[in-house]
Length: 411
Ligand SMILES: [Zn+2]
Ligand SMILES: [Zn+2]
Image (cartoon, rainbow, N blue to C red; front, side):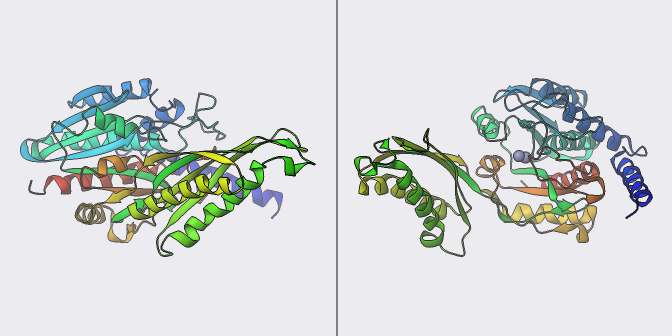
């Protein structure tokens, strides 16, 4: 490609990017959704520190006439939109936290805080949910039931949803349905992916110490070498997947950290290892926990060493209710076209909305945000993560349709 050609191409790319990213002026709520997302994006806050963010969320919801409760589970916000007629209660959730990632994008609305970034799309979730509140508030005279908005802190590993549940999130009124969405960088903008059953995995962790006896690297017979034992443990842990669980059931055991030693010619006293365990099925999850424990505690004594093991239970699997998923899928298909609703390929990632779904039948669906033309191609948590902002409109329309369909269900 000549220089002129590549220049023309990059100009076209920039023009297209501006066209796609620019707020649509014909409908004020779209413009508002984009502006909200960009403001949240520019001012990211980490888990349980979402003070500015929650303040904006609460103020918006109050302005719309909702009953707002703040400080739920730390920085969480709960708001009720009461329809004119009796009916079920539908919970709509958005997460508010950013990640400790240093943004490498150069948008005008890039993060203003070094080392913090909305790199998972939670800025988009808040903008979408606030847009849903805005649109449904306009229709409240004809709505049945109650829409209960949940803006949660700390989804990224700190379990903000669980803390909100402990603080009464699911009481008074108890939701009959629960809905949430995630923008998804692997799905083209314009598509919404909805599947019933498990869509995200349970995610646990473990920590272990293998304690041997250190010494000179050239005199191994006078030591108990914990590195050789740890190496065998790392390999043996992989047999939990290949030999202990049904080959047709998904599962992952990853050792992500091995730490030991201080010099090339010294056998250390101990090795620390840490890992993550992922599964959808509770039996698989329990089997993996048991086998990890057995391997890590029972293998070292064979070599004269001992070990310590700690298993850290994380988020359970995110499981969509079949009936609620059917209701949501049908409503979303009517809103954005059947051809735009696709099945979601489950992922081994995890999500704490699973804690809500354990108590309330619901559906967690995925809104495409990918667009190669504007470089919205990077995976979630990447320093160049970005979405096509048309996902805000599509997400809001899809969520409104799903909420209204649930509100029409007889309680
Ligand atoms: Zn994330
Ligand atoms: Zn996320």
